[in-house]
Amino acid sequence: NIYIQSLNENHPNIMNCYNELGYICQNLGLLDEAISNYIKCLTIKLNLVGKNHADIAILYDRIANIYYEQKKHSKALEYYQLELPILKEMYGEGHQYTINIMTSILHMYLLSGEANSAKYNKFISDLKAMMPSDIDYQKFEDMFNLLGISINDAIDKIAEIKANPEMYTPA
Image 1 (cartoon, rainbow, N blue to C red):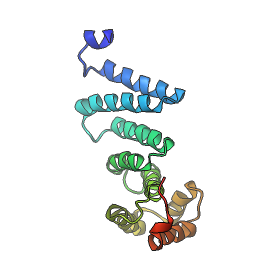
Image 2 (tube, rainbow, N blue to C red; image 1 turned 45 degrees about the horizontal axis):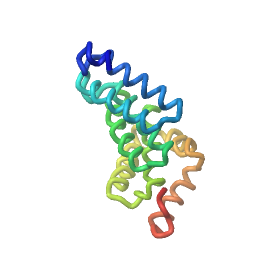
Image 3 (cartoon, rainbow, N blue to C red; image 1 turned 135 degrees about the vertical axis):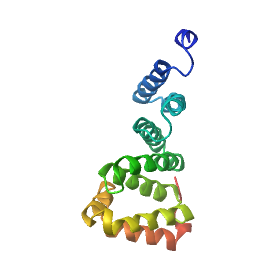
């Protein structure tokens, strides 16, 4: 509090303190406090650098990962989706960082029970549209292997969930 009183609330040093507190809380397992601190850091960072900055993507990723750890898959999905356009702009659609986040998004759709939503269908459509020119088949298959499943098993699971949504209970 003394630090905040002596500096402007939006000072970069205050932002760094929130970031470090988030990191410490995360490592101590104080996940709600970690999220709170990361969001305070994110708010200041957005004011300083705007929304299309690597640091913003990192913060979105940290928050999403904590929500994933808490099994709050819809919230994790929300933050991964915020991260994706930044990575696409920075690295392109075929870059491994972008593919990794797309994998996380796909995983969150499946875990959250949102595999029948219009957003999910658009995501899959966008993913398929990328395939011919931007991503080779091996990278696409690697994306599913990161989830521990083959591409064919992933396609089968998606079809199963779509055909029998009542049998799937989201976490």
